[in-house]
Amino acid sequence: MSLTLDIVRDALKGVMDPEINKPLLELNMIDDIEISGQDVSLTVYLTTPACPLKEKIRTDVEQALQSISGIGAINIKVDARNLGSKNQSQEQIAPGVKNF
Image (cartoon, rainbow, N blue to C red; front, side):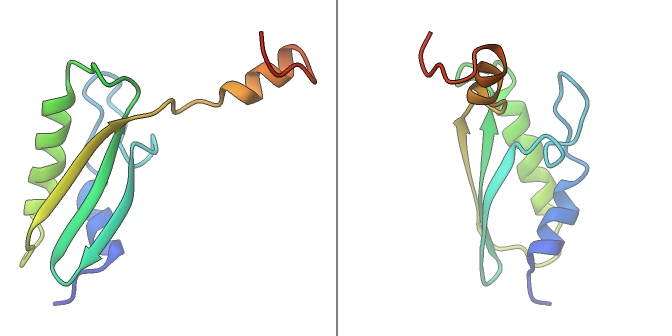
C-alpha cells in the first residue's frame, strides 16, 4: 500500500492538544507533512518553545504515525510559532499603524 497524505492526516486526526483537548490538525499545529515512499516528515508547531508538554505531544504524534501499516522512518520536528495573527489584531486597534 502506498502512503498518502490522506492516510497520514487520518492517523493524526485523533492526536489532541493535552491542554485544550482539541485535535492538533484542527489547531493547525501540524504542518510541512512530507512523504517519501513509506517515510514521513512533519513539523509540530507549538505556541511557545518552552511548552511543558512538548515531549508528550511529540510522543502522541509518533504513536499515531506508528499505527499506519507499513510506515517507514518517522521524522518529527518540533518548532514554535504564534498561531494567532498579531498584525490583524493591531490593524483593528489602530488602522495604518505598523509599530506600537
